Length: 343
Ligand code: KG4
Ligand code: ZN
Image (cartoon, rainbow, N blue to C red):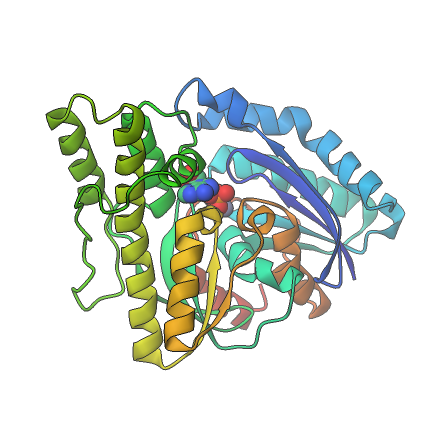
């Protein structure tokens, strides 16, 4: 099936054309980062307006780059949630209009489900696997038994991992979004330069907490006036990053140990982080795990990833109908129930 996928949950307007949930014909991403950077974070109302402004041209570009016409499209998949309500509605309304006008089946897809399955666009992965979803809004550990079969093992109790990177970057005076900037500065810093806490690392749960780590960085900066300068800044970034990654890797290792599932997928924007990729690789080597991390373009927000579950649902006749609404909060565990009811 040739699927057009549309994503507008946060600050990326994206559209992709994907064949059979596997072959990416095009994957167009319009990033709004420049628009939000001056505010130090995403401004929901501005995000919605920008999505509205560019979504049609992003879809046109996706069709053009995929060398297909609207007549060739056989189904539409759109992010239904979680995300910013107003931003989601732009993608959903566009998808509905196209499905209605062209008499195409439509399916609303969970954004995090897209992240978890993005790696399938590069190679197949066997079930079950442990998935670590780390993005700007999520830090979750899941057990994945199949498409649509997700069980939450643990999640953050406060900030998401990406949110912690962005907030630490902000207090260090670095531009938004700060995750990639911290990653770059950390490359020449000493990860043992400062000893930051590893919150909840040995609490026996699969939950995370990053707000205390963020406060520890703030306290360090307040006590050390030169902490944000030169080599000290690089050491600070490397030390914060090492603490965050140690917790993410440690909890994943614990999930593997408890479940006995030796196959791991790491997904979401923070999966671009070079230290996290390296440390996960080290864990995989030590514990003899099968590790799958998509290439950075497929870790960050994109529309192609939605076509993996989207294609699966559409080809199994699980369509959403034209009455779907945005689901700003949408836990992955509830998808099994939705599938039982056949949407
Ligand atoms: O998945 P994503 O693109 O959007 C959401 O669904 O949230 O994730 C965005 C998050 C941001 O917080 C960004 O700072 C973070 O991913 N990020 C990184 C890196 N690249 C992006 N965090 C750490 N290191 C990176 N290299
Ligand atoms: Zn995302």
